[in-house]
Amino acid sequence: MKIDFDGIQAFVVIAELGGFSKAAEHLHVTQTALTRRVQKLESYLGLRLLDRTTRYVELTPVGRDFLPQAKAIVSEMTLAVGRLKDMSKNARGSFTLACVPSMAAHALPAVIRRYAQAYPGNRIRIIDTSAFEVRDAVLHSQAELGIGVPTDRHPDLEEMQLLEEPLMFFCRDEHPLSKMKSVTWSDMREAELIVVSSMTATRVFMDYQLAKRGISLSGAYEVQHHATAVSLVAAGVGTAILPASTLEEGARPGVCRIPLTSPVVKRKVSLIKRKNATLSPAANAFFDLLKQSVSGERAKPS
Image 1 (tube, one colour):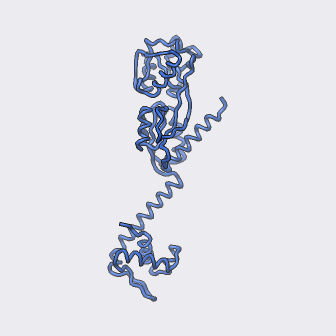
Image 2 (tube, rainbow, N blue to C red):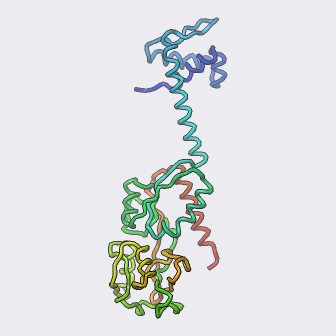
Image 3 (cartoon, rainbow, N blue to C red):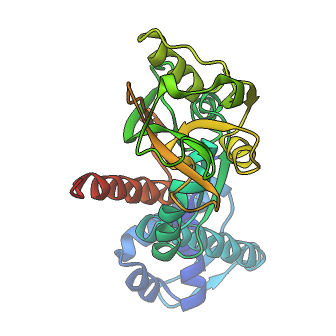
């Protein structure tokens, strides 16, 4: 069923202002156009809503009965359109972001803080999960945007590199290697090494890069999340190889991070969205802010 909103709006304004002339002026249309709108609505309904002569306009009994409902329709539509215009103009609303935990816990909060200041009242739902699940969440429209480590390319997704960060060596400050300015992969003691699961994108990427150079590390402990590895390091259980963004220098008392060399291995972090998908105003504002933040970081002198 096609709802004739223009006709309903015309009927309501005529009833409220008491005539076609004032109603036409209020709606910025000619009286002829206004008359056509009402006639079209009445023809569709098969009912007369207004009795009109050259001297007066008055509602029919059916028109009087319909007027409260017609007012509600016009009011609800006006409010809904107003909300959409506000969303478009001021990026109001909410959106879902899928993100790998290491970025959600450390690098992302600063951007979210800026977003909250620029768009107070907006709501972000964050799905912190593995890189593979980040991709799937965006692919299946469970999230508008994703931040993760690049995995297999998908034809329906587009990726924009946000940053490239090195893997680093994490240990307690009393560890024999803690005073080193840098350590090499051959310095690792597998008997005390804490590694992330082989099912994570970071581990897959690291193993691939090391295998090209004939290096293999298995470790004595395996965890699912970077934060768990940091906690075990802090407790003195062992050492870990993790992305630099996992923990800022000095953020965890007693834990230090040291650059890894021979080779330097860097992981890429990308922003993911569906190809040709129109982002909601709230998500698009975040997308733009994130791009600005990355551009600003790249512009800083090294």
